[in-house]
Length: 583
Image (cartoon, rainbow, N blue to C red; front, side, top):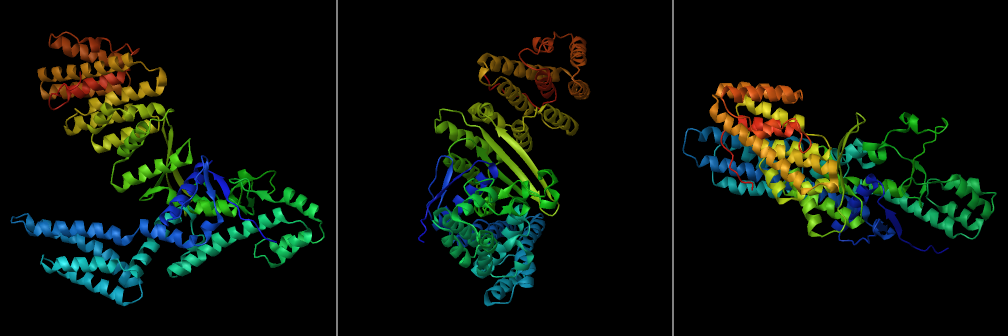
């Protein structure tokens, strides 16, 4: 029988599969192979599997190259050491020692602790270790060190060293949190060569998938029971013997009826047959082992309701390639729209991460890209950030939702300038609270208290108050938000801030700090009367009129109490007068 080849459309419905498809696409793109995309996903072509085990490993070897990572660190530390050696001061000795220690520690970690102790002796490993020891033994800078550093970097880049170091790294730090010790991740395979591990990957993921695809095609195209039985006689499919025994006395119609009634279809790809059950070996962050999955049983019949095909199994094994991974955290951007947009959104994050951009800066890139593309419908992003500990069977998963309303907040040039006025830590925490749809009131309050306690300038808090007020408006009113609402809130926040600044000039430092603490306690308890009573007493003691912004603090029809109160406190404890850069 001649089997016809066909492509299989795969839809990126669930985010786990979407991440796997993005990874599958990236792996093939890295190999120079063009994949046809559809609006919902992509077209899987069996031809992609011809050398896929090689493409898979090469992608991760390139992305997580230990040689490239170490080169950046070594050049940076060596430059510090070299510059410190040129200093002529009492501090030079300490700086030289600290810079040399950073350089020595990195070289020791890679060349001595890993290569010398755990690798077999070869010309390349001996060369690396020899140069490493020469560099570490040299305590002061000499011009020959420039050549030694270059020689060390070249030796580290040798394929037999770099590939083994990188292979051990991405298996332990990237793949294991997703899949535990399945297949190539079993510790017994760590000593095997790259080619041997590629062969294991093909045996466990590619060959079973090809057998599945062939079985389905035979069953679909066969015209008699003899064709089916003859195929099963020579088939390498894991279920071939069992099916042959079952079909032995059946007609073709009975066989087709049996297949329809008894063979499961994949929970992810409906057109594919499923002979496995979904577990942590397929995607650890959201899975569990069968004995512990009691809530998934129907009628206590010990049959899991989540069958999975070999195709889905392989796609999920590509999921780490689809995420942006920093340390132990994975991040994936999910959105409703064309699959090409999904790929592009994740590429924006990956490019930003490679350029060492902060999380909020990458968000600005996402929403700015949306604006430049002039999309007719505002996009909504679901950002999934998670880390998984396979051994502890524990996953920390956060859903960060970037809605069209939040896109408006992040997209504004003025708002981005406000974000940039904040220190990195406050900015990062504020952005995350927005994405989690949490009111950052407590966050702003804690920063005010910290600045008051440590006697730091609090001018930046005014921008946090402005952003919080706009966040509340954008998320609560959505498309119904009025420009006048934004304008009134902005003016009151600035008015409260400047009222605090003016009052600070008329109070001594101790008095201002004492009042600020009382006001902070009032805001924390949401005690508006206590706040108003404290400020009225303060103004009366100075025979000053109470500003209208304070008098109207109880009226929350246009702006909430904490926004005005925190702005006033920020002005009261600020170090210098903030320039009026707002019209």
